[in-house]
Image (tube, rainbow, N blue to C red; front, side, top):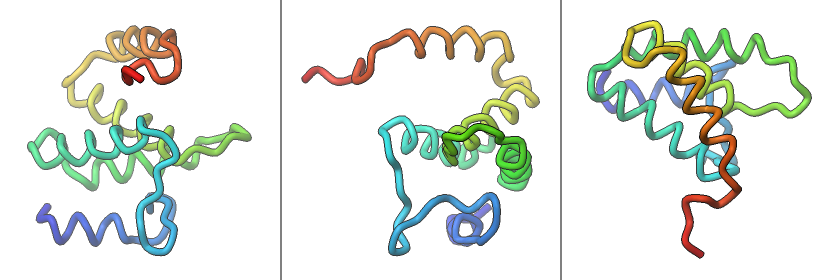
Length: 112
């Protein structure tokens, strides 16, 4: 997908459209922008097709049943599913890394 086509896909309305404020993407925490950038980078590197990711994102959004709505948690779920489905990373490995990262204190990646 060309950069223009990807931008158009991100501008789309519907369940896969990222949150915006005044036309700008909104990230409430550093991990959200990292997850966003990781998906774009992996797509640009040819790891997966954008439509494949988009469809997984729509499924993840539809499955959300928690009170604390988080678009980027759905985004991350979709990315994990695509990567596991393509054999890029094993589901068990993802689970182990998730546990590892959840055990870190907030701000663990900042020296201040």
